Length: 209
Image 1 (cartoon, rainbow, N blue to C red):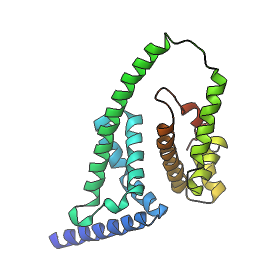
Image 2 (spheres, rainbow, N blue to C red; image 1 turned 90 degrees about the horizontal axis):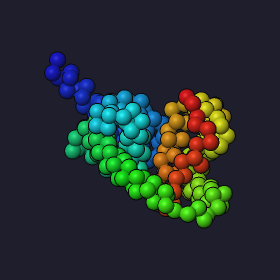
Image 3 (cartoon, rainbow, N blue to C red; image 1 turned 60 degrees about the vertical axis):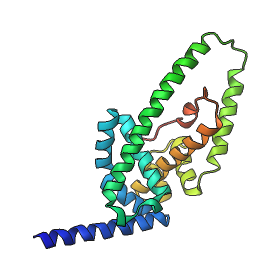
């Protein structure tokens, strides 16, 4: 029984090491397979830390984006993939809590300043500036991710419709849209001022499953 258990564990480690090598080589299907296998447990962990459904979902998304970008950091000789993923998700959850705490403080400060600020900037001009930055950020995305995001958020298609339109698996469509959104958020976050909010520009119609 012990030998059988050990053999199964070795087989699982080898399988997951192979999946991570494929992710490192840019195989989206391998990332999708990992997402199917681990998104549930990672969500449960993130929910325990953040105590927020939305935050937990964000943590899972950020964790898998990190896996996609830094798959080479996983070393099967140092431990199991599950341990590495749980540690990564926990780190992302703690970071998210810290960010939200800082954002809440900054938002309170900005709200106080806005109460005393004069309205000397044409809002339409400012909206156009933000829209131009979103478009510029979109241009930096890989073509596959950009196409999926455009169909979902500017074409108004659901995840299912995007998958059908591009003739790809539903999970792949979701992964592309999710990864594109996070990359876009990172890019826009570094280009806009602290008081700016590009959110409305990114949500002309949130895609449904």
